Image (cartoon, rainbow, N blue to C red; front, side):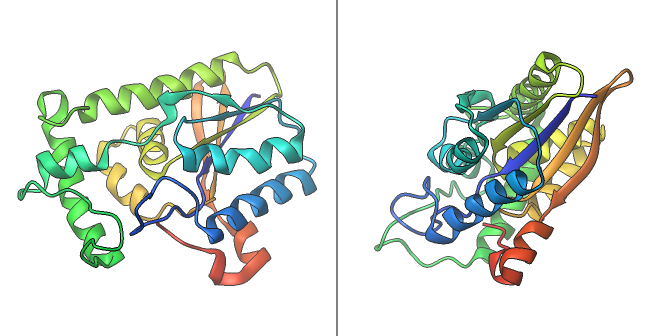
Length: 225
């Protein structure tokens, strides 16, 4: 049956002037994914990436290792964090980047983001954010269904995406909107989620596998932001 491997991008550059690029560790994580799939002999027919830099930089070593040209589909892009925080944080917050930005710990930022995301989801299609939760979930779900539909019997594809898009796709497959925020919170950079498509539709087979990262570098390669 057709198989889709959803790969979360490697660690991005949180707290810097340009978040949307992989950190040095993120590049290493992307290389580990590429080496892992190549060493397993996984036959991949297509590699698709969102249009964000961190997603494309994650797809690049995969494409090179597997001898494929990556395809770009912006439907796999992440939600607009700044737009959601501005409309749903309760304080009109916006994430600041760069040397002059106030220091924010991962834990503190995650707490604010989780509450904003819960409010965003609860607002559904009537929310004030530039892209509503309903629109985002439909966009990502559509990308998932489209790619699975295009795969032939026994074919495998890879989609490089982001934690929120990954969590939205999985919560949709689980038919549990309430799973979205908890799934996103634990999504590991460069983790691999496996989805299969069969006669009964599309099913989530495994979520967030990061054993390849632990094998390559122990806990030091396992990050969440």
